[in-house]
Length: 503
Ligand SMILES: Cc1cc2nc3c(=O)[nH]c(=O)nc-3n(C[C@H](O)[C@H](O)[C@H](O)COP(=O)(O)OP(=O)(O)OC[C@H]3O[C@@H](n4cnc5c(N)ncnc54)[C@H](O)[C@@H]3O)c2cc1C
Image (cartoon, protein in one colour):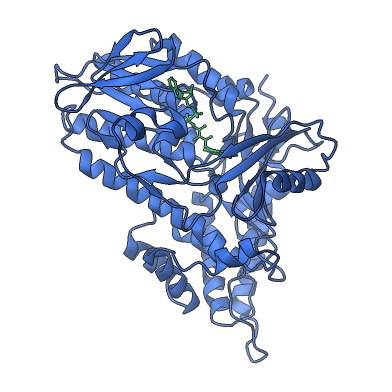
C-alpha cells in the first residue's frame, strides 16, 4: 500500500475495459485505493475488445499473487491451462533443428543449462556435440509428455511456468473482481477529452454529454489510443521496418484428446500460426504480413493447416499496429496495453508489458509524491523494455533459414536490425561469450543469456562441422547425467489433465 499526500491527486479515470483496462483497474485499486484514490473505468459497450491474446509469460502468476487470487479461483472461470513454454516448428530448415522449445528459465535449469551453454560454445567452435536446447530443460520434457508444471505432492524442484486462457473470460473475471473491490464502472463511449490550461487532461466527455473529471487518466482504449495518441498527439515509433507482420486471423478448433501444456508456434508461408490449448477448445491464429499475402490466402492456408476447410469454424480478421509510443506517460495520462504499443504476439509478451507498465508507474508515481517528477526515467525504462523484447522477436525472423517465400528471404536479408541485435549475432557467430555480451548491453532483464542460447542454438545457427573435429567426451558424459536428472524430475509432476481438475 502507498500513502498519498498530494491533495491534487484523488481521482483516476481508466478509459477502456479490455484485459489491459481491467488489469490496470485491479492493480491500481490494490496499490492506491486505500490511500484515498477513487477509480472509475469507462468502456463503450459498442466498441469490442480485441478478443485475442490467450498466452502469457510467468509474470501473470505474479499478477494474481499480488491480488491474492489462487489458481483454483481464477483458472476454471477462464478455461485456463498451464503453459511450460513455447515450441517453435519449421522456423529453421537445418536438419535436426526443425523444432525447438523455449523454456521459461527456472532455478532448476541451473543444474542442466550450463551443459547446454557449454555445448553451444563447443558447437560454435566446430565440435560435434549436442547443442539442441530441448534436452537440457525440464520444462521441455514436461511439455513433450503433456505434464503440468505442478508437482505431485510437495515440490522438490522449482519450475517456472505461465498460462493459456480465454481472453474474453479473463476480462470478465477481472471486471467482476475490480467492481466488487470498489471500481466504478461506467458503460459509455468517450467522444472527446477536455484540457486544463496547462494542457493536462481535465475530463472526458461521454456520448451522453456527461463529463467525467479526473486527476490522472489511464488510456486503455486499445489500438485507438483515444487519449494518448489521438487527444494528446503523442508520437508513435513504428517497428514495421523490422517486424513485417501487421495482420492476424484467429480461428478456434475443437480440443484434442490430450490437452498440451505448451504453445505451438509453427512457421507458415508468410508468417506463423499459434496453437493455444484451453480446457474447452484450441485457440488458433495466423500472424502474417499483408504486404506478402492477402487475408483470403492467409485464411485458406490456416484452414488447410487445421483441416477446417468446410468454413464451419468462423475466422476473425485483425489488423495490428506494431511499435510503441515515445512517451507512455505524458502529462497526466498513462497509456497501458495496445494503446501504448504492441510487439507482435510471437512470445506472448503483451500482458507482461501491461503489468510491467502499471507496476513501474506506481513505483515512479508514488516515489515522486504523485507528481510527474520521475516521468522521464519511467518512459525511458518502458521504452527500453519494449525495444529489448522487440530485438529478441526480430531475431527469430532475421536468423530464419527458410527459402520458400519472398517473405522469409526479406526477413533474413533485412538490414534494419538494431545495433544491439547485430552485436549479439556477431558475438555468437564469432564464438564469443554471449552471456558477457548480454550483460555488457544490460538487457538480461528482457531475455537472459539462456533464452538467447535457446533461440540461436534452437535454429541451429552453427558453422558446418568438419571431419577433423570429434565429439567432446566430457560433455557427452555430462549429457547422460543431465538426461537422468531431467527424467527423474519429470516423474514428479502431475499430468496436465489431472492438474486442471480443481474440484
Ligand atoms: C493477433 C493477436 C494475438 C495476441 N496474442 C497475445 C498473447 O498471446 N499474449 C498476450 O499477452 N497478448 C496478446 N495479444 C495482445 C492482447 O490481446 C492485448 O494486449 C490485450 O488484449 C489488451 O488489449 P487492450 O485492453 O489494450 O485493448 P482492447 O482489448 O482493444 O480494449 C479496448 C477497450 O477500449 C474501449 N474503448 C475504445 N475506444 C473507446 C471509446 N472511445 N470510449 C469508450 N471505450 C472505448 C473498448 O470498448 C475496449 O473495452 C495479442 C494481440 C493480437 C492482435
